[in-house]
Image (cartoon, rainbow, N blue to C red; front, side, top):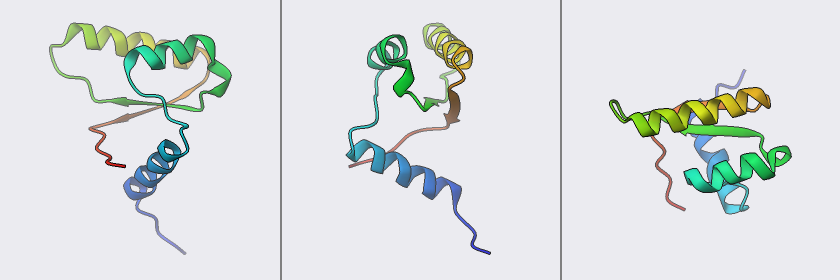
Length: 84
């Protein structure tokens, strides 16, 4: 039985998708894609919220609600650090 390091596999998957131009980043670009190209969205990766940042909290709530409504899986991460 082969054991996988989930963090490593996840990171490698995100890097590969980024190289293939299949990743959208930034709040505006992601919100636009969620409104106009919902059929192309497979997963939503959200960074950990900053405590006491009400604007960021509201943005996360709205994005999460939209993703749940359209049955898009959500993954929350502590931080995203990739250099490609």
